Amino acid sequence: MNVGIKGFGAYAPENVVDNAYFESFLETSDEWISKMTGIKERRWAGEDEDTTDLAYKASVKAIEDAGIEANDIDMIIVATSTGEYPFPTVGNMLQNRLGISKVASMDQLAACSGFMYGLINAKQFVQSGDYKNILVVGVDKLSKITDMTDRSTAILFGDGAGAAVVSEVSEGRGILSYELGSDGSGGEYLYLNPDNGKIFMNGREVFKFAVRIMGEASNRAVEKAGLQSEDVDMFIPHQANIRIMESARERLGIPKEKMSVSVDKFGNTSAASIPLSIAQELENNRIKDDDVLVFVGFGGGLTWGAITLKWGK
Ligand code: UT7
Image 1 (cartoon, rainbow, N blue to C red):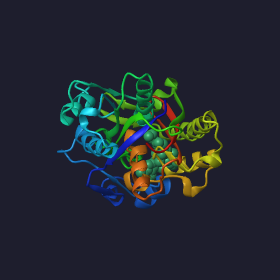
Image 2: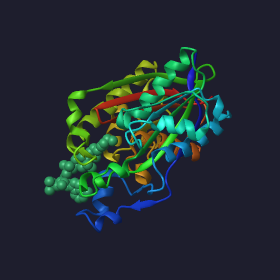
Image 3: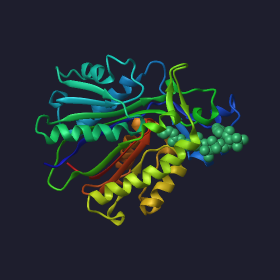
Image 4: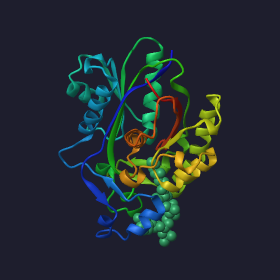
């Protein structure tokens, strides 16, 4: 059975925060942020819009795009690190908001690699024949766990959501290969600090890990699909830092114009970053049916995940 993405949608909050905003309270500059990260602006949700609201808005679009009704969804998997509560999960609350009766719903945590983990989990359930249409959401409201007094992280993060309906798709399309991994020995480099409820990051160490793992995992996923880098139509990496993304692109041997870049507009939105980039490329007609896409994420844990997918229903 070929399992892929039958419907897709994303949502970013309205409120745009530019780099200049940080100059008023941190020793930083638009120039430093742009040059060192590629970020120009990010979106922050207000008090009245929490993680489940973001997830809901992306999900409605994905369900509509799939041409199904909410009631046709038979499982919800939400990848997030920023749920309102440990329980009920965002998945539980989203199920209620969507008015879907009694289906399984859960959150799963793999930080910025979450959407990759979610897609692959969903693939197994669909492939087993036990489930038909699984709503996979990558959502994060990082603004609520960002330490605004720490200039090395405050400038990086943003809020957003993306959703995919994972179902059987036509022959030859869908997920061709994947690799998921983790290395708990690097957990100390990036974590949610229980003392203040904010993100702690050793940027240098995460940077080194990211450059290596993004290239390696993408290459392995392409190889597992029996493809070469020339066969890849679009490379969609986790939008953490343009310098990390560029170096992964070079390791994979993909030309510049085939890499999706949305980090300039949204910053690092963790589990939402790959979906927001997919949405941008769909909107710009840069993804067509039968295009070969490579997604690759990395993040806290440390975790990673790469997927090769042939686009289309
Ligand atoms: O989703 C996964 C999570 N995270 C990431 O992917 C982030 C990975 N890491 C990074 O993107 C980079 O490490 C950063 C952008 C956070 C920092 O870049 P870097 O090249 O690793 O710089 P650095 O941490 O070595 O810092 C270089 C200098 C330091 O000053 P000194 O010690 O050389 O005087 C920092 O204090 O840059 C300083 N710095 C800043 N300066 C102006 C750090 N943040 C800022 C800032 N504005 N916002």
